[in-house]
Length: 161
Image (cartoon, rainbow, N blue to C red):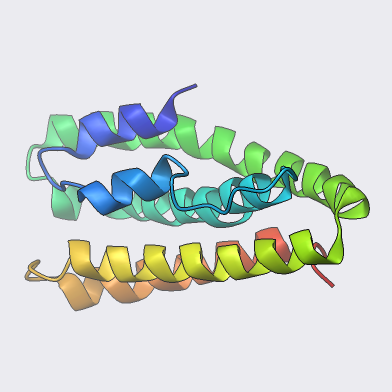
């Protein structure tokens, strides 16, 4: 449904994403393996939990970030619809990943785990960087990163034993 493009358009006046972030979200820094496990795990267990955390935070506190009440309400409604889709993606992705694990080699699983750690660290660092100039950065960062960690843990629960 092109969620990333929609969110980017909505948030562009508030936040700009660095070129490195675009490269990472385009999958350019993933390992080149023949097993789809890494790509699926990064998308469903890292990026989508990050989207849930980010969009959920904006959904709840957008009025604090966007002064224009009408725009704030439009953003909130758009993000609510995307959030519903993202929750479904995380759970359906988790089931798909469990099936891929059965077909993957130990090497592919190790590569995937390492890639997940790398992408997760990138997201946390990126969020900190994005909000470093905000006057309310500490107020925003802690709950947003806590949300991401919680969604990441929930999405990964029972996947990699």
